[in-house]
Length: 288
Ligand SMILES: [Zn+2]
Image 1: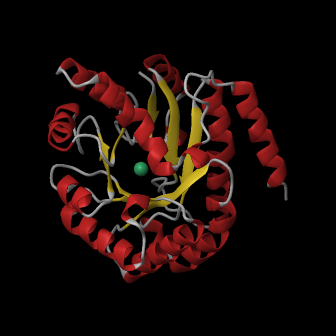
Image 2: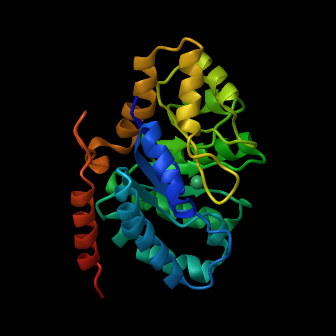
């Protein structure tokens, strides 16, 4: 089995994690830009962070045989610092057009303020203009209400539902998301969010159509192997391995797009040296 973890914050993980992921069969990851835990005080730190996940993290993953892609966006929490948000939204387009950026995100709501909605809408427009997928974060609290509100905005703005994923879905939201034609992302986490057992129940009810499975491993007590462990549990319970393979490889490529993901062809070995060459050329593009 080969795996893509379509939502993981490698920036906050160790090389031990990369090593363990590779040994378990993870060959590619998508890293969404996120809130770093400490509020940023200037737009320049966003620029540095976007460069880090686009260049340095890609090289670091490549050293362990893993293809690294990312998504770019201003997170909802920091949209509330309006002066900062404006500067970040101005710089975002130059990053969205880089090779290796596969979606706009994570977008969403934190406190559901007017400033958050404004930044959300500006970024949805950027995605629509580029025909890029959108990765939408749903909050832990008030998840169902938040998911419905976000889907209403996406629909109202003319986003085709197959271009947006509503992430961190649970039993509470999966049906509503799939019924409206959006993709549903499922985060398996050691304590909060979903456990492998709960995801197995969702899988049994809904199958794999427009479904993604991720670890969202970050600064918290997370486990970057939970995609692999969830699939192992499903296989142990008798799920069809070919179907599981589609869930953890073909589906993320279908959602983000084969061209943007630009992964080695089926079965082809990944060449870390070539990946690092891309990394160096990117650096030249950005020289300033
Ligand atoms: Zn995340």
